Image 1: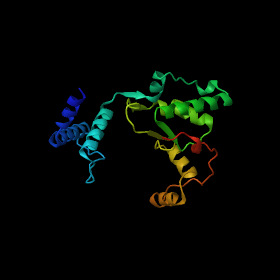
Image 2: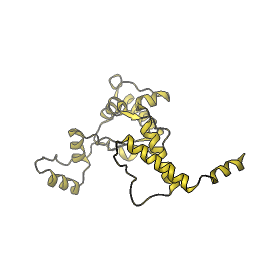
Image 3: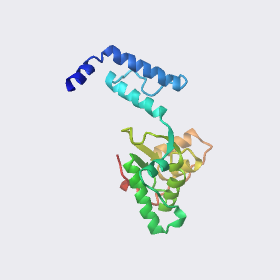
Image 4: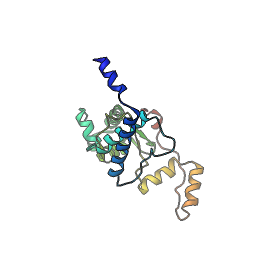
Length: 198
């Protein structure tokens, strides 16, 4: 049986690879209404690597939508509402949530401007309720959740206030001269360096 499988692999010719890759590319272009995707460049990977990437991309784009709350619930995780927890209990639940996310390849970044309660509330009521493709456990890639990256004015203010360096603040001031930048402030919490990493 093993020899037969190896023989089948040998029959997978370069022409077969090229045809499969082009078919996947065309499928993805149609699904995006002709928009290009990030890997279209002159520095192409090997055909085998590109084929694996395109198959994974196709699977990701066709995956049904879910939420991380639902994905965690399927694994047996449930988290109480913030209002029902005192500060000590909330900190324990927050750590349990962070660990559960990391176990699902989901990692948090830029959280040092938020208290434990504010972070827990944000994760429970916003981050975990956003629709995501149902591929959390099937893709080797890690998800990085930037707690200043949702695009709101509040998030941008937090990034400029607590995380942006002098060069970045100068760039923003020059690019948007009508915008009043918030003053730089020291981050009130020291959580990020202790968070799980891929």
